[in-house]
Image (tube, rainbow, N blue to C red):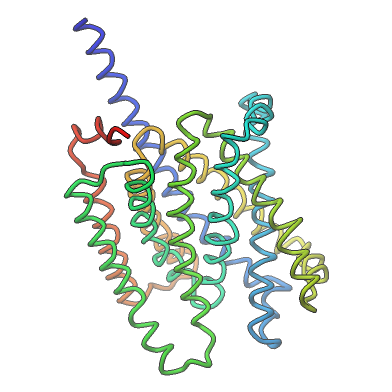
Length: 345
């Protein structure tokens, strides 16, 4: 009996360790994604938009998001083929009670979070987009607490409070400037940052419903399959039907080498960042998985600073420091709390 208990403890510690590894890999790849996610805005046809007003930027963000989702799905299918899990993908898709959660999460992760993040990049800038979305662990931890009873300890609550303080320091200066110049249009970027934080936080909590009983590699592929379906068969056709936006012309114009290189790079970095993200949730819980992955803000600032040779403004650095500190407080939860990450239902 003692040997069985020791084996159980050893297995749990190994699982927790791998959960931390996966979440940190997610942070690195997520931070790297902001480089191609920003660079594509500076390629034709997207760099030439803006003279037609805010509608052009919104359409550009929608097309970029749709194409990035297609690229991510392409790499995820390659990943499943290498792992010989394509059969498991088909079996899981047919299990509606499981796949419905991934399809539901795709609504928040794609048309809400990813689209919002591209909006924030286009209107305000990549550093703001990266740091603004760092508030997403607050949403995820709160939803996990009330939805399926993941416990939030006093330490985790302090971490959430520090993250919120960081969010205020990120948003406040820009919003004050926007109120003084409401016709500038940057308010759409701030809404986009908020959409990213809410969307990714909600997606993590929703996906957690299915990841306990399904394979993360398969689950994330189903999630992107659903997102591609939403963009290709619902959202973009609806834009064409109910507006005079040149969706097809912009999409075809974006099929050039320069733009596609960045879209493919964004797709591969985001695909495998999501693989690592989803793998961490069953091992260490939604709240902690999101808190550790939120270190992507540090990597995003580093990669963007190297790529652009520009340092972010001071209030971004203050917000980054606070949100990372809040994530670190959640990350350093006592080891015994990891054994009771979920309260009995």
